[in-house]
Image (cartoon, rainbow, N blue to C red; front, side, top):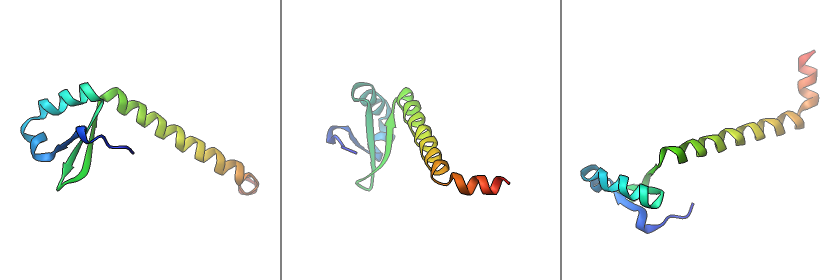
Length: 80
């Protein structure tokens, strides 16, 4: 994941001025909140989060399908 340093906010700054964090998300799409100078939290718009979740679900389905195809003979034997 590429991190734009302009999108970094310390946790203390986020705590004291969350409206600024929200404004940055509106302008730039996401903000990374640092805890102890380490990226810890990602703040994104809600509609982006739904897209990320959908992609994750699709990935799980793809992996499941590959496993079933790869082990079809074993599944058929177990089904007997």
